[in-house]
Image (cartoon, rainbow, N blue to C red; front, side, top):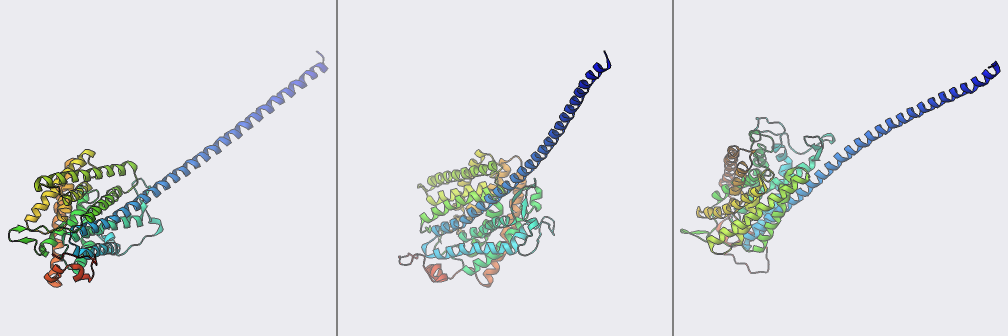
Length: 464
C-alpha cells in the first residue's frame, strides 16, 4: 500500500469518527434537554398538585361554611315553630302575648349573646379552671383569625358563622320557658328574666361542656343540647311554674280541669316547623359538611321523632281511650329532644328505642306533673326537661364510648345550678315588680291587658 492510498483511507475514517462523535454529542444534548424537560414537567406537576390541594381545601371550607349557614337559618325557623305551637296550645285571648314573647326572645338572645354570651360560653381560658371564664364584651375579629380551623388545619367556617349559629341556640332556652309560664306571666317580668338567664346562666353553664370546661374534661357528652339547651330551659320553666302558680280555674278542689288550646292546626304547623328546624339543630352540630356524618344524624333524628309519635300516640290512646293529637305532637318533640344528646354516637336502631321511650315518658310526665298541680300549658317541662334528661342519660346506655355515671353527674350539675339560678331570678322579680298579672287581666286575656289588641279582631272570643 503506498502513502497516497493510505491517506485516501485515513480521511474517510476520520470523517466517520467525527460524524460518530457529533452524533454522540447530539444524542447527549437531546438527553440533557429531555431530562430538563422532564424536570420542568415534574415541577409543573408539583405546582399543579399543590394548586389542586389548595383548591380542594378552599372548596371544603366553602362547603362547610355554607352548610353551617343553612343549618343556622333552619334553627332560626324553629322560633316560628315555637311561636305557633305555643299559640295553638293556649287560648285565643293570649295569642298576641305569646307571639310577642317569642319575637322578643329572638332579639334578646341575639343581642345578649353578642354582648356577653359568646365570650362567656367560649372563653378560651378559664380564670376559675374549668368553671368560669370570660374573654371580654362584644364581638371582634381580625382577618388573620377569621377562619375557624379543624384539627387538620382545614377551614370549617368563619368566626361570624360560628357566632350566628351558636346565637340561634341561645334564644331557644328562653323560648322553652315561654310556653310553660304562658297565660299568666307579666310580659316585662318575663322579658327581664329572659335577658338575664340567656345572657349569663345559659352561656356560663354551657362553657362547662362546649367551652371545654370541667364536664368536658370528665368526658360528659351532649352532642347538640339535650341538656345544654333543652334541660337548661326546662329547669328554668319548672322554677317559673312553681313560683307563678296555676292558671285560674285549672285546679278546682281535688279536680283537674282541662284548658284546651284554641288552634290545633297552629300547634301542628309548629311541630312540623320544629322538626324541620331540628335538621339544622342536630345536623349543624356536626360542625362541618361531612356527608356521612350529616346524613347519619338526619336519619337518627327523624327516626327518634317518628318513634316518639308512635309511642305517645298509642300510650295516650290506651290511657284516655281516644287518640290525643296534642300528645302525638309532643311525642314528636320528645323524640327529637331525646336523640339530641347522642344523635351522632348511638346506632340507628338505638335511636328508635330512644324515641319510643321518650314518647312514653312525655305522656306519663304530663299526667304526673298535672297531678302535682304544676300548670304547664304546653307540656314544656315534660318535653324539654324530662326527655332532655332521658336523652342525656341514653348516651351512657347506648354508646360504649361514654359513661352513664359521667352523664348522670352532668345532669345533676346542670339541674342544681340552673334550677337554683332561675328560681332566684324569678323570686327576686316576684318580690319586687311581680311576675303574675292580676285576676281581672288574666280572665280578660293578656292580649287586651298587656297589648291592647286582639289576635282575631272581629271574631267572637270565648274568654273562659
